[in-house]
Length: 469
Image 1 (cartoon, one colour):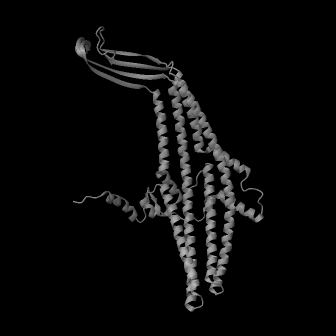
Image 2 (cartoon, helix red, strand yellow):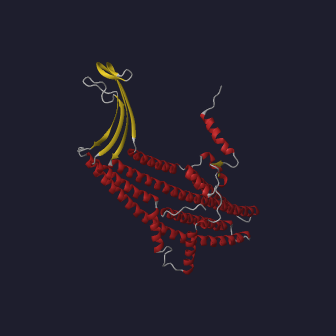
Image 3 (cartoon, one colour):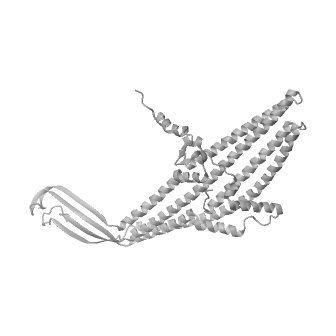
């Protein structure tokens, strides 16, 4: 009898999704994946974000564990012993004490901490850490949304790159057909047709290179969304009419740049000093990771107080009910069978061999290190804002320039096509014209890609709310 192999089980699990006409993943139709659906999948299945969630859960559990130090502790202890010498043990069944080689005792005790500064400051420290991890998780969610939005846009732009490459192939094919008809009639040398054929082969190679880049970008998005690789062939993004429509603030800056080009006024920057200050204040006031660093400083301060509190005593109260629990047997005294006891215990470390002192010094250094980290992070955020705004200004004008160049070259290519059809110019001249159009379109897409990437990075850096449109 042949038994199924592991490979057959894997094939059985992965084959049904591939055969499905409209595969669903977590209730989402992958054949027409919208941006908000992609963000939803990422928040549910991205491994990095799930790890951030678990870190937050861990910090919350540690805070609850620190709180348990102030709750009552109940313990039960029992012991049975064999002795080489006979001792007196109370016999609860006979009501007297008998000499025996065997002894038994048990106790039930409740302990309640009344005063413990180390436990109090540890609780404060763990709570600050939990709050910081919660903010880190929130920041991770916002960053993940911006990352998905950026990658979603990258895939759309790469698909446009593929369309441009295919359009280039069609241009060359048209020129090749024109040249082939001339060769057959003897009105054109065979070498010209060979040149056009070489150009077609190069255009086809460029098309497949664009396809490879598109597929690589798409699979990077699929990995970020946490979609199984077996479903990758079914993933198709919903088309977007205008990416600028989803970003009205960027569209306004684009119109402002167009007006500056029209008026030839470049003295004033696109972003005013007030806008720069608003971006800076927004980032420093609402960035989750920066707020988390501030909570880490508070947590480190609480840890410092916890170490300093080791110089203070600890006070506990207890209540115990036991059976013969003071001593297991007694040669010179007669133990009682059952008794109830209670009291208050004070423990105080008077000298710890300088251990506490060096722990306090280490905690002070840790607090300062966290403060310096927060200051450096704030400075890096401000620097990043200025850098991104400078790039955005350049990308806006470069995109508009490339857009105008495409329009001019398209008009020229149209005229060149008419001249080629009339026999006034060779297909090689037309090919050069179409090459220029495709290169200009690629350059336009490159500037558009850089513009949106830098703008999304600016919004992410300033902790703006990610859009789902």
